[in-house]
Structures are given as C-alpha cells and as structure tokens.
Length: 340
Picture 1 (tube, helix red, strand yellow):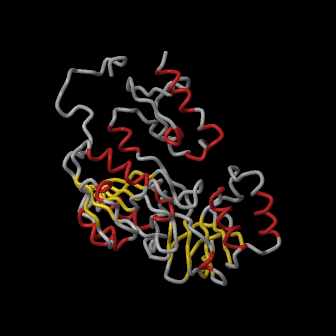
Picture 2: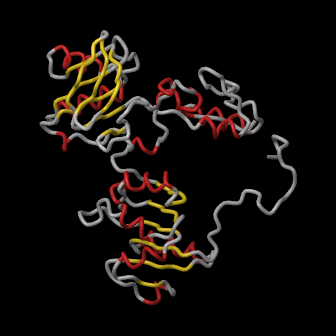
Picture 3: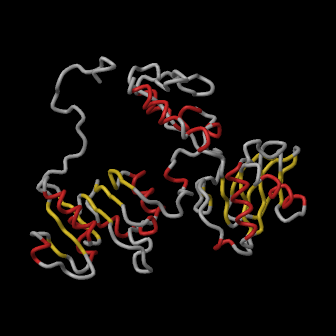
C-alpha cells in the first residue's frame, strides 16, 4: 500500500477478514495436527469441539468438548477443520447432509486428504452461499481437480442445458460403461474425457462446432484421439451445433440437417472464463472483445497500481493460452516487481 501510494491512513476495517475470536471450532481428528490446530485456536479464545476415535486425556483436552459421534459436533462448528485420515468410513465424509448440519455461513478447512470431501456437495454449498468459504490444502484426484472449483463455465445457452444428466465438468467414467455419452467440445479436456470414457466401456460421441479438432490438444493426446475416430471407436461430429438437449438425446444441426444422438450423460466441456465483473470492479480495464486485462507484460501489474494479475485471467476469454508451462512464471514476475 505504501509503495503504490494507496494507503490513506488507518481505519478499523482495514485488512479485516472474518472474526475468529470467540467462535466455535470443530476438529475432526484430534491427533498431533488436530491438537496443534486447537493450540493455535485457543490464542483467539475459540471454543474447541472435537471428534476422535477415542477421547483424549483431560490434560490434552484442555477444556475442549469431546463428541463421540461427529454428527453431534457439526451444529457447533462455525469453523470445521478436517484432520482425519482417508479410510472407507471417511471417504466423502463431508457430504450434502453433513454440510446442512453446519451453521449457516460456516467455513470448512481441509488439510487431511482430498477424498474426505465430496467435491460436488462442497462446490454446491459454496455457490449457494450455504458455506461462506473453504480453505483446501488437498483435493481429490489432484493434480486433476474437479472443474467446479474453477467455476463460471462457458454456457451453450440451449434448452435442456440444466438437466441433471448434463455436466460442464468431467468426473470419472466408470458409471457410464455400456452407456451412450456425448462429449461437447473439441479441445484438450474434451479429447481426454472422450478417450477416458471410451477406454472404460462407454459409447462416446464427440460433438464439436469446428471443422477439425482444436489446435490446443496436447501433442501426445491428438494422435490417440484421431486414431480412435478413424477406427470408428469414437464417433466425431464436426461442424455441428447443439440445438437442444433432452433427457435421452442431444439434438444438433450439422450440414443443414438435424441429427439426434442418444445420450444418457452429456459432458459439455466448453471451457470456463474468469469472473470479469469482479476484475472490473477493481478498476482493471478489460479489452471489449477479448476481455484481456490492461497490464505491463513484464511486471503483470494492471492499470490499477498495486494490482497484479496472474494465471488464466491474463488470457481473458482465451483461457487456453495460459497453462502450467507458461503460467508458472507469473508468480516470479510479480515477486521480482514487488521487491525492486
């Protein structure tokens, strides 16, 4: 703030986040990490609740309230810290039903294992405002993350897009064995999903509005995808535009003809975009067409002094231009600019 001349003097709300003092913290798994979490929380006079396979000695509890059944702890958790191992019993433990037992606006922290959290349930609760936020150090299936964490998919805006069997995020293939699946899109995510589904027994149709597969498909994925299409193992409908999605088929237009493709599941992998309204609310100027932000390419500082941008937001609508190989340098550029 000082370097950018944006500090206007002290104010009570400066840099203020969510108050933790006096709040209730629930800890699932009171091993060494859980106990360390409790020690730090006591400094903020937080009320500690915990659930563990066995109750701690009173000297270790230090006044924390034990819940033999973790279900009874949830209603006392303004903050829920998950520190439990991943077992058959804890897989997807934090599901929709348990989230509903948490207080409105609770905050979830998971530093244990990604599989302890049901991603679909957590994402839905965050989007609806049922949960205020989540701090996640681990993810199920990492480094391949659930697409819902990226948010803001590029919608097709066609009838039926909101049907329950239509998803903008690919999950896993196993439940679609011997089923008709339509994958919409022609870039890397679509190609990888189509191949994964095919290899796990699904009957896959790829629908893409372009006349050929996207140029951004990884060089080791493209020949595999092209060979599967050539062999007829994956049906590819190019130059096709989706008109409607019904409960059991996708209606599309191709070469001025209407086609109907059977579909038990539809993956509309049409990409996602940054939250442009949030970026503009900071005063950052965006190009009217590409939505790329105005910034210095060397420091990644935007037109607003002190606000640096990194990752896919730099690409605007063209998020595919930013990936691990080039995006990993953004942090270094920003740090170098800030330390000059």
